[in-house]
Image (tube, rainbow, N blue to C red):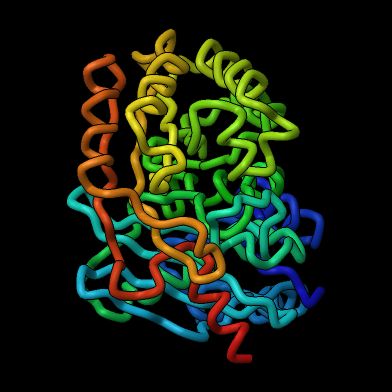
Length: 352
């Protein structure tokens, strides 16, 4: 790999690096401020840092490891970025505009091995994990893009739901969370950050122990093992019983709400029968369960699936509500661009 990105160092790690390289501790505080508050584009812009120190940084790190390749902007303000990594691999990042603020969805792996049969992200198998610096850099690229518009916009929320399984890249994702959450940097509140997993039960338990107030989302997408195994290969390793045991552990440890993501696939998982099964599955945790019903973005390579009828989605939602399960139908964004996760990347790779 080329030199690592300095964005991959937590505040503590940056301090340790400066001390190990014969620098004063306060240099770490100064550099951290330049990176995340002043948001420089080059080390040479750090005007109060000695030239020999800047040379040391340039010798050991790169600042921005991502190259912007494509930007797609939707009529609703959603922006999808395609970035190229040092090794030529491509990743996607998405900026979404909500009433409550600006949210960025980040990618954690090049490709994905989870094997969800409806997902564009999994069309290309996992090549490698992203480093913490490459994940942080996605946020910084978006923030720099916003800074250039000079409208005072700031990334306020993060969802770790892009290409890849975050808990399959656990250590780098945890470092990323600490970096973007740091009070003297980007200061994105932990409760404004959500990490989504397809259901790696041991990592859900480990996540429960980390002490961060970061939100957890589970990509459930089915109320029983038969359907879930048919659309999500991960269910063979961690069937619903194991997944829910890990969920119960998390709830007991944290007493924090979990969002259950549920993509609506016509004739597969969208009927009243499945709504009742889902309500029963979540009945003993209904006070901390929140179901997000997601309209399906079609992918040409997965033409066996189609979007559920609006009437079926509404009926599913109403059934959950009657059973006391909190749920919402996700508002669609970016429907006039490559909306499905991984779709823009897949298209570009075909062109190349």
